[in-house]
Image 1 (cartoon, rainbow, N blue to C red):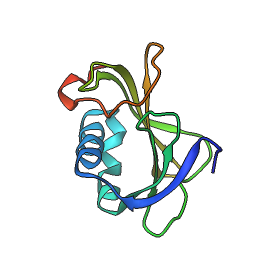
Image 2 (cartoon, one colour):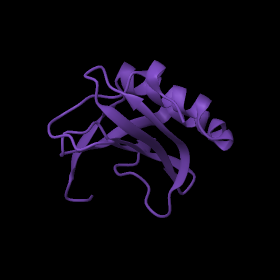
Image 3 (cartoon, rainbow, N blue to C red):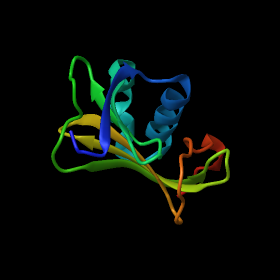
Length: 121
């Protein structure tokens, strides 16, 4: 696991699940084929920088899949705190593997996931 990722083994929160569902439904055209994986997707790592990025795994995997990324969604949005963020949903080796959320402008401190209604291309 990269040094900036802290292991975390847990189910998706309702907010995380709703965002992933929305990204798959509204992301790139081929993202919809990953919808069946959502019921078995769990969090296996959290970023330690203060952003809400997640490493994700399917089934019994203890770590996300690695290798070249296939981008399922790449959008911009705003958090409830007003932080403008980029959101990228990655798949690797045919499995959902990472939810990347980053501040578009310099921002120090922690922030939350974007408000779904704010997401746009």
